[in-house]
Length: 170
Image (tube, rainbow, N blue to C red; front, side, top):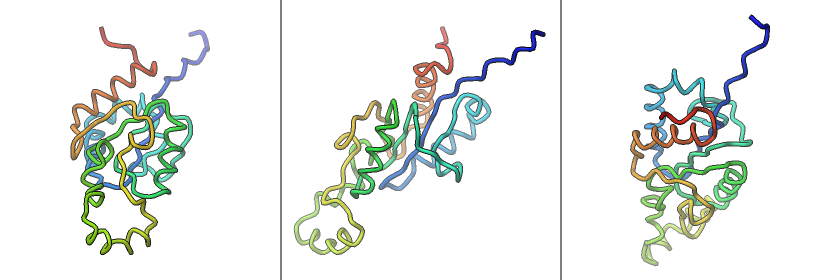
């Protein structure tokens, strides 16, 4: 025994963020963790995931998984901050990818828009609900409502290789 400490395992720095949506992909995410936790806890540093922990930080992320559409100026600014601190941003679920169904109010007739205008104003919503790619550069998309769990696992495994946490299996 040489007395040298083993090099510390590099970990994928991940954030999970949710905006305007039903959070069904967040539920799928936690269910996937039931099957992969023992393996992933050694390989992934969940820097920000409110569904998993109370102490969250938004700093240098390898991958930010972002669920939901953007419906307010505050959400837009937060999304831009997430993008600025992430090497890769993944739009998760239908609302993040297309804006729908959260963006259905974009298609309301004038009478209906007038009827809900006090809510839009009260909660400082944008005039239009937007998908992520309308605001920032998105590197990958996991469509669906909710996302497909197998596609999510595949994307996580790809990111583990891409960011040098594990070697590609030959």
